[in-house]
Length: 286
Image 1 (tube, rainbow, N blue to C red):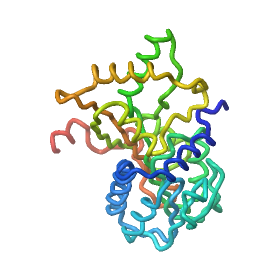
Image 2 (cartoon, one colour; image 1 turned 45 degrees about the horizontal axis):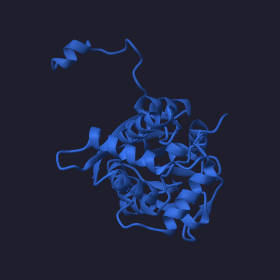
Image 3 (tube, helix red, strand yellow; image 1 turned 135 degrees about the vertical axis):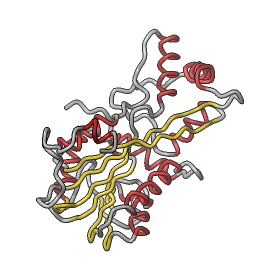
Image 4 (tube, rainbow, N blue to C red; image 1 turned 30 degrees about the vertical axis):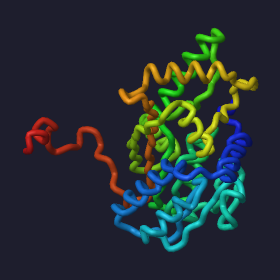
């Protein structure tokens, strides 16, 4: 399979962001961790063994711990620098857990950079005990759409062609299909979108670097982008995606995925034609 992402470059971006922390640049991770806590709060059960898989920071583990839902929580990252000495180091896209060894698996904001996402989800499913829960959040369709359009338009105008600079993102339908393909029961997907305003495109790109989210596409151009490209992209961005006060908008969409490891006692969807009431009657309230 032709890789979409360069995992070594992606890791280098994460290590650089860790070494040069910028206050407030982790706002998306904090938002995801807060949402994770809310989602766990409505699950009426405990999870003896939980794992935070490739979440970059301790935010996911902390959210699980504060929920009181798990007795033991393991952190797994692809580099020891991301762990601060606490957790397991695993090769990228590898879940180093025994089959049926955990009850809850969580992954926040890294699945969008996985080359073999179906394979990783299969590994997560195998690691879960029957009726175990997987919760994941990844950057989804619509994320950085404004930046993608502006860079594409600027590069096409200046050079007559364009190289990939913003990663492709899965949409809700893709995420649901991936959960089903991996064998999860009761799969559910939804999206949490937020619009963030910046002074200009350069402020946005500084935030992306501080998140470790710079371009890690395998097919990226190896030639350094020119200053002229970014200046023209900034102009196009401001022309198309600015508010009356001159600040620009950037969209971030988090696709949430949840699914359960199959168990005989789980609720089953009704078979087609088995309903006891016509849909029109149900909509009328009986």
